[in-house]
Length: 93
Picture: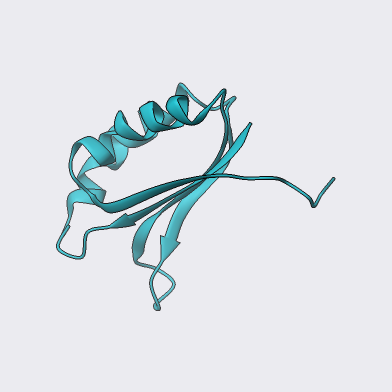
């Protein structure tokens, strides 16, 4: 089943995202077959990351919660919030 995951960075995160990025990318390598699309959201300057968005194909919400909880970004305390929602792809069919 598809899920949309939206993570919002803490405003006071400073350089935490940059420092944790290598571990985050290594972690995601284990899920490459389950990640449909992923990347950072950007601020008004279209350069500064403000969070992360994933569409993942996982068995259930518990698997997605585990995936999110074990992400090095989450373990480092980067995110102010994380939301998980079931998602239905319509286009492309």
